[in-house]
Length: 474
Image (tube, rainbow, N blue to C red):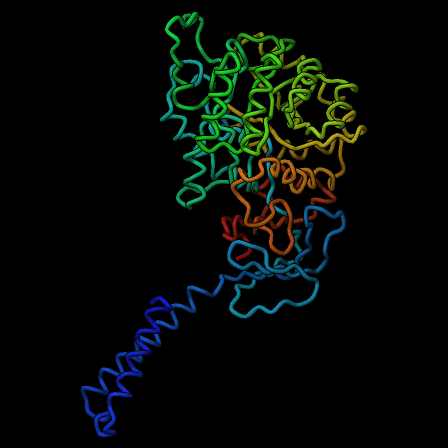
């Protein structure tokens, strides 16, 4: 019963009392029945309004908190969740009336992890689906299955850097599909023959000017020339993009583009940036090499995706222009990708030679570094998301790595400005007013980063938006 309805019933009781000037009327059975019925309605109505207005409260006790920002944990803390936000974090007792109390047993609470280079539509999609005859229905089914697995690895938010994930995001936000928060880039933009051109050779030249299948279903967008780039960029924002993703240089998995190729002209890059800025957002660009990155930075690109082969001068230019290095800890090790195309395997070896040096140099130069994985086209590879976070220990302390995967990544997401879909509270931190995205770890990942590599074994509780999706404590 709504508050207005309660007011109406209360008014009816008052009217009965006023109209019954003869006190004997108040004792008549029919009058008493009406009044009792109204009082019953009033009672249940008040209870329902109270239930609707009262927040759902969860109180965590006996927990050590890494807040996503500070190196020292908040020891022996209490954390109160109200609905989907963190209401209080304190080493002092917190009033817990009406709350579900969870004794964390001395575990470490960390913010939900984030991945700044994820492809929800491609994460578990076999490569042959894209290259040889798959369709959008298969993509949709596979990513709906992949989404809950991503969340259960502790990744509560991903910045999706290419693919049609708009409907998946909508259904996750509505609670109809389980999965992480998604900041979607939408169709991956590429020049003809660029990193996201998935056409077969027998489809070229395209004399009819037709959009290829993957372009028609919003997975990619081939655009040549400033007018086409503007149109495709505007279409991406029309569909709900939070940022744009373009290919500014050659790629590993793609067929037609050597790594050294610079893709898109300065004017074309600037056109994409201009559209993004008109939407108060930004452009992220897939690039590995110096000349392409330098041109992208001068065009206004704010996030360089990959960048394994750039040098000191380019990093200094990036720092001067406040540009992020969104790099992934991809090495030619036991987790190396295997491609059906021998040329892609050669390019993978070339690119990963630079991974170690660029992490060290970027850290030395003070360039802003984001954590992401870019694991795709394999269910087995996607399952290593946490393992790739643990690989950061090669270059960073556990604190630096966890801060990167939480509050630092959240800072990068803020570049989406008003296009950022999750503005009720901050992400990537455990503090009052922040989203209740958190993990209870059996151990201290600030001492042993390898704990994050096996979520199934070490994450005892996973909460997103105030809702518990995994709980081994009860």
